[in-house]
Image 1 (spheres, rainbow, N blue to C red):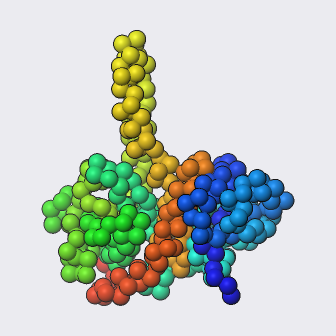
Image 2 (image 1 turned 45 degrees about the vertical axis):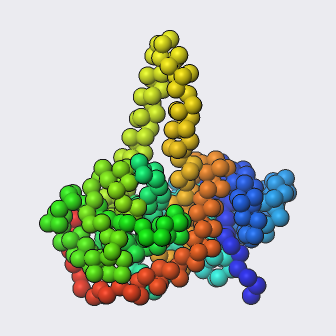
Image 3 (image 1 turned 90 degrees about the vertical axis):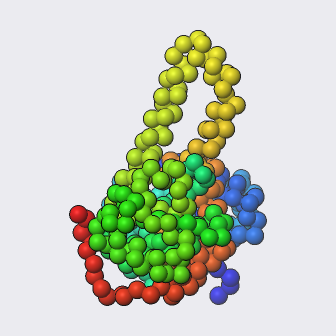
Length: 349
């Protein structure tokens, strides 16, 4: 077989597909001229559209998939009925070794279910984890799991830490990223048995020197550590709370600066600084959640993003492919010393 495609792209997934997908690939083609993309979708619909984007067309091979998975389709239905969908065909190409990874802006639940069933986890991984990059006062931070696993045991948390640390090295370019376990307090006696046991394992591991210990919710935005490790239940709540807080802040700033004539004048004076703040907090910069621990790279773009956001998701996936992310995970896990069959409390307190 010839050299695998860099990425398979689900052309039909997302609120504004295929337009934003193709526009995003046109931007990504400028940044990754060496890449080869397998573009999967309805070729009667996207063939002529791709031809109007010459940079993307140069790097893409089109594969026909007549169906698409809707945003409303349940994961179980996607598994049964979506065999000819653009998402499933793209994922199949990764499982077959034709592509190193896949990027989709489609149905999140379907993508996670199909990826876990079709691509499967690495032999060393018990469960995959959903990770994303977030802003903080000290720069970008990585957080996982964000919802793939509602309940986790000690082994899962340790594996998440290894994957998160490796991800921060590959994507954020950090040589020795610090990491911590999200908990209800920073003291060693805080939390339940599984979190305390995970901390004990990590302290003695090969990444022990950069283990900060327990961190709390405010440490996420403070940038206390480079990687926040938690279960999917807590992580998803923290993520949605943070997104809501950012939206509230934007709405309040809009109200303040439109409340009076002096306020509007103040906005004109503050506009350069506010533009920098807007750019720093632009959600498109953080687009691209990653399902870590699979036999291939899987990146989920936000369904409502634009071309710039989708291009960023492609950037994240390309970073993981280029840096041989899965090989580095295998290496990290092989250095762990942890009983594989010692079940600890997985239920939440």
